[in-house]
Image (cartoon, rainbow, N blue to C red; front, top):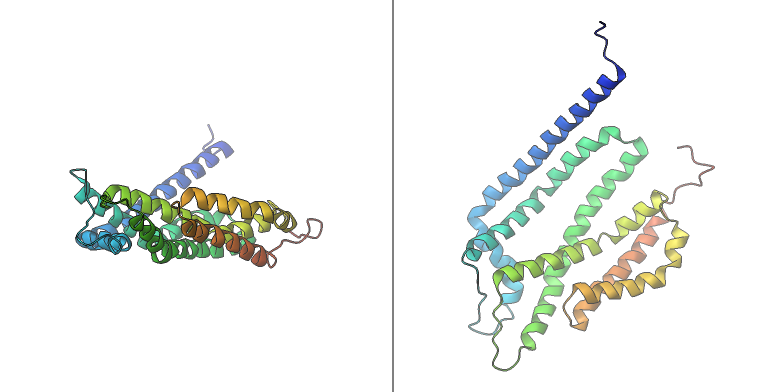
Amino acid sequence: MSDTPTPTDAAQETFISHLVELRDRLLRAIIAVVVVLLCLVPFAKDIYALLAAPLLKVLPAGATMIATDVTGTFLVPLKVTLMAAFLIALPYVLWQMWAFVAPGLYHHEKKLAVPVLVSSFVLFLTGMAFAYFLVFPIAFGFFAGYAPAGVQMMTDIDKYLSFVLTMFLAFGITFEVPVIVIVLVRLRVVSLEKLNAIRSYVIVGAFVVGAVFTPPDVVSQLLLAIPLWLLYELGLLLARFVVPPPVDDATG
């Protein structure tokens, strides 16, 4: 019997080697997050206090946040610290992802992937910062100012965390719009002319998204809807510089 490996055996060996590499890179990414988390755990209370600062500033004198769950005072700051650890370790996590997929990409795909990864990370953080420094003070001020007479605003820390995470995700994803537009145009998923043609629908959709994902005050809704629209326009502007050549003229 010949010991020469068959094409099936070679393909299976390649598949297994990819799985092993994927496992190793996932472990490295997880270890990085855990290491950062362990470094931040001693400061968990301070990190949560920083996250809660926009709400605490607008609470009436003597009012505080509360924990209705026995484990809330421990788990909620730990969750916030884990989120902070993941964000700090995210560049390394993305680098591990890139190192895994890069060997299978063409040169032009690599040229597109690196700017997309970097800009996506920066824009997501920018969206979170926009929510924290601008939207939260306005939204929480609205809630505190409209509390009925005889009712003291005392928010549960776990519900506050859920609200903040929802807002961070909403604004973080919103700020990804230029990257999404550029990628769609560059990969020929949709033409730039088509994206220009649906501008009016995008504007309406932006205000719908603002109404769904923000507090009920008009200002907070506008603070999501208007950036979403403007970021779409920015994506259209930048996409003009990455429009692929016509298929007949493309060299591949």
